[in-house]
Length: 368
Image (cartoon, rainbow, N blue to C red; front, side, top):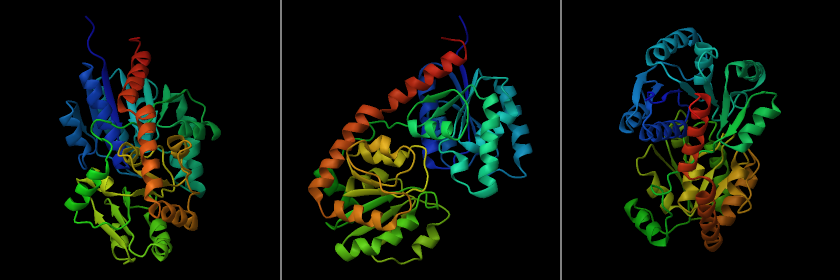
């Protein structure tokens, strides 16, 4: 009898979504009887989530961005890989993709998931260097697993010639049930909220997620709906600046462990990101049956379908108008939320994502 498939995930989570998906896939693979480990920094939630799912956590000290620490990170990762002896390595996000491919250089089947291309998050020489690296590194990449068809298309359009597999980010629909009117009332009561029109934005508070754009749009929303409330849920480097901005009708509550309650309480969920791969916060809002206003980043149109339109990235007036229209029309918001729940059930069930990834690993390892 052959030994179980041995899979190593390498992650330097730049967003909570990367950590959530890495932990979820590792836990699923443990249930398949595989030997699974996650190499990642010891900070954040991913180590605990890894252990809770039955996988092994391998501490790997890695800075968030490329820099002088890269050679040390590559050497450390090479040692972890040699000791664990994986059949397949999955590199989660751009920093892991950099260090991992330099460490492995194609000697082991290597899967890379950008979780939003690094060259789209940069500008000038830095963006050009990131793009040149991605084009070069495909020689050490057995498959690029994109979290959305749009992410795969962006890579192809940028001249990154690789084998692409689309395994969309997914949501555990049983853990994220649709929230009905009673759930909304209960959530608002538990969060000490009133009946006011409520927009909620969930995500790391940073330039990528665009909370500054929502703050700029909110006075226009309030001019039409004076009692409207906007709540920003999440931690991040820009949280202090947001909290000190004192925009009327905006509350920044920081990191919370009760995000499902905030989604249930919302009339509209707003995600004004400047770039994404496929936003997990968006999928969780869809699973909750909430109407969405999102910017037209990678994966947004793919997720929304014909239910609603994404607004142009960085367009503050369009963002304000879209939020105002939905908050002013609760029946429309409810109908769109129900339609988005159905799309989540159809396209973004986490079990499908897990099966798609498992098929890739089995093929690359020669087990299929």
